Length: 86
Image (tube, rainbow, N blue to C red; front, side):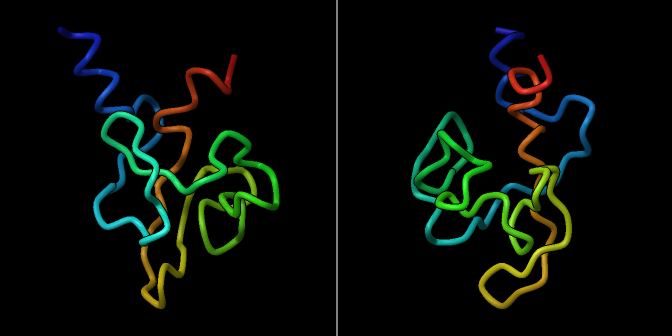
């Protein structure tokens, strides 16, 4: 049960950001998080994940313009750091 709780939280060493209200094109659900189609290759230009107005080129998130609203895009490493940092 504890492992499920930690997996759902996904925060690890990266700061937690509010994960509610993702853009409308984030329709692919993995666990509790919605992803944009093309998430299998997040660093590719086609996915758009690493665009400056999304999760940034390093996918570590930051200030973003989401649908005309300034917000903080979460770091993809909150959940994926475990697999990407290895």
